[in-house]
Length: 135
Image (tube, rainbow, N blue to C red):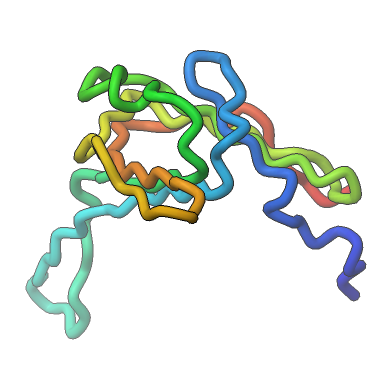
C-alpha cells in the first residue's frame, strides 16, 4: 500500500545553472524522445523496431528577476534538476547536458502583473547523479 507521505511534491524542486540555484524557477520539464526505426522482417507478422537517435527537449519557467537568460543567449550550459521532498525515500538529481535555448525572450510584460520568463531548450544528454529508491 502506498504511504501517501512518500508522494513527492514539486514544491521541493530546484534548478541549478552554473552551480547557482535559480530561486526564481518554479517549473522545469525535460523529456527524451527516441526515433524508432520500423523494420519489416521476413517471416514475421509483427513489425520490429530499432532504436535510432535521441532528442532531449525541455522548458523552464518562473519569475523574471534578472537579465541572465538574455546574457546567456545561445551559448551551451548545463542544468541540474534536484527533487528533494523531506518525506520522500530520498532525492533525485539529474544533470541535463549541453543545453541550448530555442529562443531568447527579450520582453513580455503586462502592467500590474508579475513578469514571468519561459525558456524552451534542447539538450544533448543527461546523467542521473542521485536516484530515489524505495527502501
